[in-house]
Length: 439
Image (cartoon, rainbow, N blue to C red):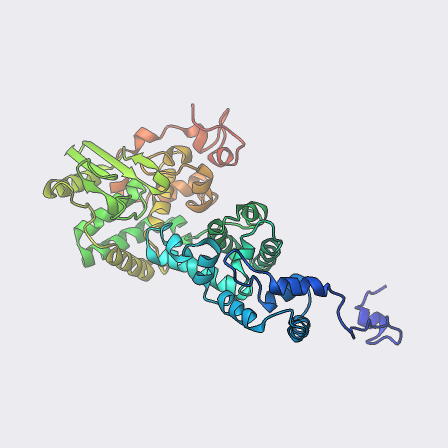
């Protein structure tokens, strides 16, 4: 028997329906408690709640609270001048409300958590918008009070709202957690604002062109374009960033590529006696520290030449990060039809190392690698596409020759790379089905 919709089966309208419940008359709320909340004061002597906030606490409409308020004013129970002052205080701008709640500026606090002012400002503006729209400009003194249910209720409202968009939920959780830390509501963070890969998956930047067999040829063409615009020094920067696997870094923080200085006095430093004898130490994000132990011949010689021309304390980078990003992005967008960013050079490096026979777990430890093997697998390499030996053989032909020198010292782990008698595949090792290392 064919199945239809309810409308098809039972008709558009029914003659018999449940009677509607009348909503006429006064809502059944505790009016004495509502008046008590309207008169409640905080530790500074200001009235604690606005009428809108009392309505949310009492789970009724603002119209009902207005009626109760007017009755209380007529009876002399509430002074309307005091309530007006309280509304002006509570409805102040976001940072003023934060300062009222904790005695300090949230904006100043958030700026101490980031290297750049723009990053801190982004978080501040996001939290401000949430407070204004989702939290309806709630009283943050009450929100910060662990004895109040307001914080938990608004937190659940926020989580319900953002979990509808899984692609953005992780970032939205990370942003709002700063406000909870500032208000010292870690209890709510641990209870409702935790992040998991299943519910809040990390955003993965996919760059499919890197896993094409002809990518090496496209890269060489883009490198030539970079050389024609910025010169050979920029190409040395590009190659060094690839082979070391360094992030772009920060000059002021002496971190990674743009933090490298000649000598051994800074956090990230390069000191060379010859192309084959050097100390290359890298201070990375999260205070990680790495040592560069491999550079191919052409890169070592170009780096040594520049090292000899530098004074102690000079920064190694030859071009500003803004110009580097722009020219590299323009070149790749034109040649590859996919605009690559400087951080994609880490993806290129890991892919080339693996295709050249370096096991993934070894490549992650080489130079500035990855502390977490699963992160490298999930975010930096399309390993499933290059697992086939025939594909790697074809891909390897187009990798530039300058990159290949010296890698034989890090290969020879065939049991791990290809899988074999007594040895897991690299993918199996990553997924926890085998052990790391080769025979």
